[in-house]
Amino acid sequence: MKRLLLIAAFAAAGRLCAQDLTEYRWWVNDDPATLVNTPIAATADVQVSTALDLPALTRDYNTITVQFKDSDGRYSVPFTTWYSKGTGAVNGYEYWIDDAITSSSTGAIGPNTVVDLIADLPTGTTNGAHVFTIRFSSVNGTWTVPLTTEFSFFNRVDELPGISDLLLFPNPVTDELGLRLNTDATRSLKLEVLGIDGAVVRDLANWSVNGSTYRTWDISDLAPGTYLLRLSDGNGTRNLPFVKP
Image 1 (tube, rainbow, N blue to C red):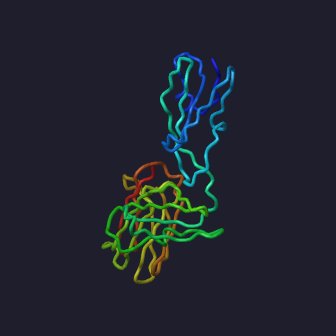
Image 2: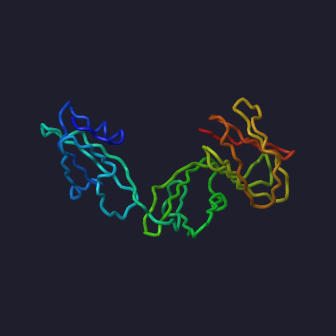
Image 3: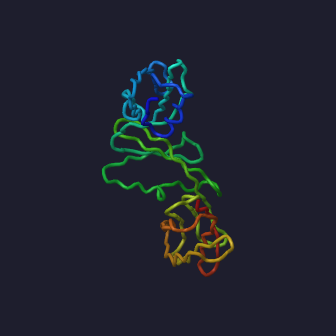
């Protein structure tokens, strides 16, 4: 039996009923014109992940499908996975809200540029949960796979008069919890993270705000679960739910 040095998934796809493997074939992006057949010599070690001579493709993310042939002439079940090729330096981005791609916003990214997405997210959307999607372009004209997360938005906070355009981003959150809001005057907000039972699990201290501003907090060490971000200013309190997966 010939030995195959493959990634685990390829190994599973290439296992054929105690027969010798004599050949493998592969193709990209479901295109039969790219089909390549490669014989497997006796006692050969096949490192498929490095042996494939992948064609030059303009897209960043592509599919590759591999099949193995045994000495009885039978092929294994095809195994398909994603692969990517170098895209060059990132030079721009595009994002949209709630799948409204036709209303997307774009921006350029230069060397050493930091994209401030929390500050750039739109105001005036409807109250509640929304979906945020972003993708990045490269100097060779290709795009990354879109990345999607959710956020919560509130046009106004009745419990905290004078505060509007309140945005909690992202939600669910894994590392950095971001909060953006607008105030009609300078005020001090006390922020705390509560467990689902109402107990305080993290004191985020006071935050002096004036006008449109935002801030982030590192909550990467919080245990997975459902939490409340409590905002209070001495006159009122508002709890914003968020999830830490």
